[in-house]
Image 1: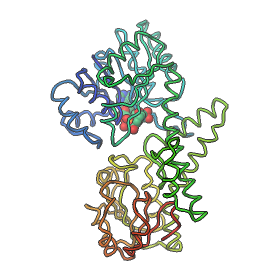
Image 2: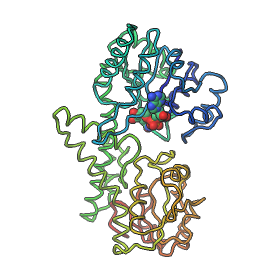
Image 3: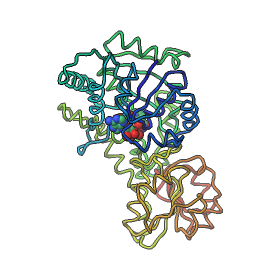
Image 4: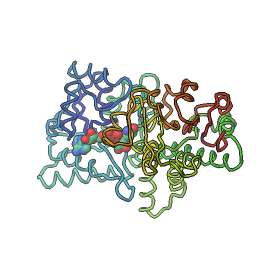
Length: 443
Ligand code: NAD
């Protein structure tokens, strides 16, 4: 099938590569010339396990192409994906300007029937806006070409995106058109062999399903963080509580890890966007507002422990930080807890020596060169001459470190763990002063 994808980001690029891999002919369009040039040279703009060889082999086989030529892009595809960003507006609601810009481009360039598939995460009612935009532009150009607008939200997880697109848990198709449904079933048939994962529904339900999924996951995290804070208040250990509640199959062990808050490009903005669109519709989404507020506070937690330990006297200290990306297996630093921590530390006059397996370039891009930030080549190098260690991201390589070396390298045997990776009793044996989330203030 001939497929066009607008937006070569995490979603667009992975989706395009996976569709090309099963034999579809894919053209990717982006406004970023640099990104397109790099992709043509085999330089992949993001880190995602398995993505580089997949993109390269499909590019070499001619099944995926990259361009900034939107007209050519629209001409190519029978189905046209919109996979551009929907960043938060000033008030937290989703900004639809990129989505509507693509809708306008499609309307201007289309010369035959198109199925427009919205993959971006968008508020309920956006498909109607896309439809209206295409109709309005066509009318202004004296055109009247038929088209369908389908909602097909994306559920990939950064860090496991290729696998998630190759083996999706579900494929949600929001449409009221039999023709569009048939075409999408054909498009996704290669991913639907094991059992039927396609769920067809009305467009508004499909749009809300995406927000409901992310908000549920964010709620689980904020709930556990609230319990972790209560564990501190009451002198309990949240890790025992986690195991105790996870054993109930109605609750389960998945996604109930306490920590220093969620980040990334999706949970923070999607919780906010759904809460704001609820408010606009006259409904106060109290749970969502609390999920957001709890997470905001939780991101302050590590700094609170650190400044508490030093009696607010941090000036001149050096912090070693392990983990900068918002979660493991990605270089994405959007809304990462590490950023909140680093910015507080800098404000308090602390120097940072940081290490992350993939997000060093991104850190450099965000913060540029500054005297109080050193990007270390290894996790061990980050420790040298530092006063304490903080873990912000649970990368595998941080899970069984050399504790003796940590102790020897730091001026104080002091570890702040934002992801609860270690047993407090073991830390005690190693002679490390250990702070973790919800496990007793300091052990
Ligand atoms: P991204 O910021 O990584 O990429 C968006 C791309 O769109 C950029 O390359 C940008 O240059 C391009 N773009 C902007 N305007 C354009 C235009 N008019 N024409 C062509 N390209 C244009 O974004 P992302 O993380 O891939 O997210 C895209 C959407 O998918 C968002 O709505 C997001 O909420 C949703 N989503 C993201 C994830 C995720 O894990 N990142 C998962 C599921 C859904």
